[in-house]
Image: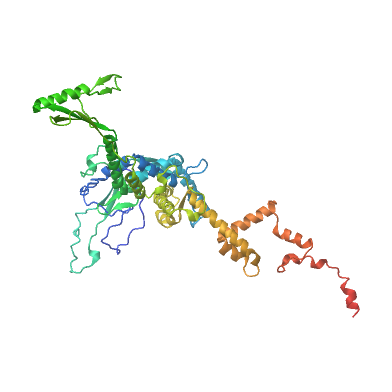
Length: 555
């Protein structure tokens, strides 16, 4: 099973020889880009955004350190990963899987083992955040080469900057029909006579890419040097966003590159403007009489140095020093004035006006949040949310909830890949079985979105109110089964489950038996309006028979 650096799980289901297509198989991350030689990972920097994937990942990580961007990322991660003291952030759902109970039990145990290998209960927030920022996630599945049936022994996280996913066209020089332009000897355009490209998929790991940000030669468009690892030995999970012009995988932060740069420039410009215009500065007009230009300038400097006072506190040494020789932009202006003027004069320049206006800053902050699919209302930290009706929930919050759900679905592909490898290695299933089982395995994440709870509570209240209105007409116009299915919206499984629980609680004495309660009401006197039922039958035989016999004898 060992091949290259890692292992490979071969699928016995091969493509039939009659099935021919000039289109290579699509990539698992949605990208259609593949290389035809040993050079990969290099792009032409036309737009000035990025040159290679390594540069792109570093840009994403620097963006995540910006306060507004970090706050939005934390909102997303906190919604997607809900940490609880008792429950795991994610669980496996097998109710739609058509398999025996023994297989389901094994799958649940193996999934719990995978979560333990990932230490997902403690590191779920960190794992999801790294995946969201980088746009990709790599884990090396370490197995015992001598005993692969023991399953995965360890899951090692791999820095995305040190890995590359390569799809390379296989070359076969011995084949005479190595070109798509070649036609079979008969001159017939038979597609089966062509050799269409076959792709080889593998990973290249380069540990030389240090933490200092240096780019290894293999990732800057050079040769594909590094450790070659098989496709099955690495778990590869992407964001699903693809730049189809360049064929590279993007992060969810990619849309925020321009709004973040604009926000940073606006903030820097605002700081510079306020520092330069905030203080009031004076203008000194110095009368120089009829002095020549050179002497006039010298006289102006003498007067300026005489009255100028610039004492600076040195925080490093604790001393006060005189920096008269340096003039800053925030100091006063000294201008000469010839004879015939108004003499020496001092005037004041007002400071900047409307320094409290930050409308442009707020605009770009909202634009940044919109680019990250985070509701703008979450930008103000002091604003709470209303626990009113679900109809009062903003549409942005609903969109955000759906966005988080899509990301959870995409992130769950990591669990599917690891679980597939674990089950196949332990001979629980075959690769053919997994292709049919995968679509029926779901992953449930803990959910604490407040509107989901509000919406559920409001729907339940509305259905119960409708059921109370329909209750007098049960048995007359509606059946009980109809009310449970169409008014309360209970499924077959829920009806069966609730009936079993009700009977169990009646037997345990937790709730009264409705049949006994009805019988007691009937026996207590008083006729009840309504249709007759089986509960009214027992009192009939208790009527005394001798009363009817004399009446019959008198006839």
